[in-house]
Image (tube, rainbow over all chains, first blue to last red; front, side, top):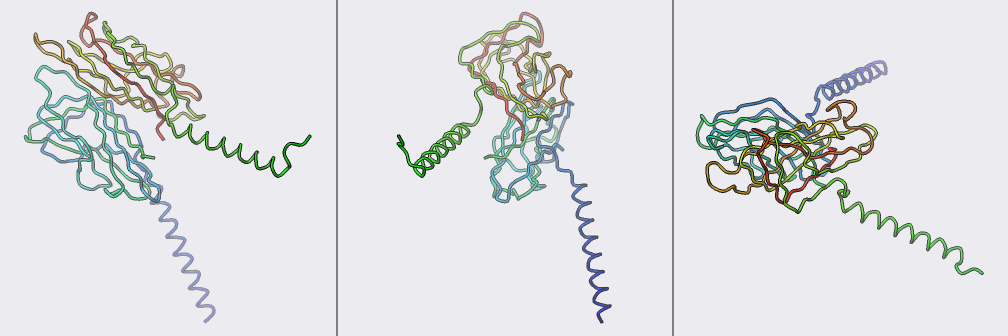
Length: 159
Length: 168
């Protein structure tokens, strides 16, 4: 009987060890997105709102989450009115501040635009790493386009 | 002649330390060190093709291992043709660390209109040549830019501010 309980303990320890190893491996693979992102290439998006623009930043919230401030700044050329928002932790594309971009004039070259979003703790923030992904789409016409060039995305926690 | 007894001395010392801590806390609560912000309240006009210094500089002190720096600039302006705007890091060349286009503010014969624009730039520790890259200690960030089209075009800047902070 004693031999069996010793064996059970060994099995339990082995299972615990495997669990810890698995957890560590998973943590090592889950590299969080950076807090700042800079993209110099041109990207053109088209289609009705809303879809991901594939740019993600992340911030580590304390045990009691505080508001996060996300800033997007970019050169743009806008062929039809567009909306820009954020997916928070994979949630739906949501507008946490101003997000409307008016169509550029016909003769206008690239123009810089900056939008700032504030996400309150109750709007999907959780303790630990939180991901913020740029999203949006055309307001009215599926053929509208947004060209982004030299853009930066940044998140910081409000103190 | 003993003015203060030993326990009194300790009380006074304790109060002095407390006062210092409160004063220190109050100062740190003001937030941004003055070198990290620049406020321009006088109108300025710049003429020329890209790129040259616009004479506005902010400074930031990097830790032993430099961190990315976020520089933001917000301005009122008017321009008959598009302008580029960027940064010179530690006296290096004028370069673009994010959006850099200021669109013209009038087309055709109508008078120039004033627009406001805010731009944010991210300067990474590895950017630029080793001589001018971000380094431990004081780093300077100077606004620069110039005309997109020719050397005679002009931009008028109104109220504007430049600010730098370390990304944490």
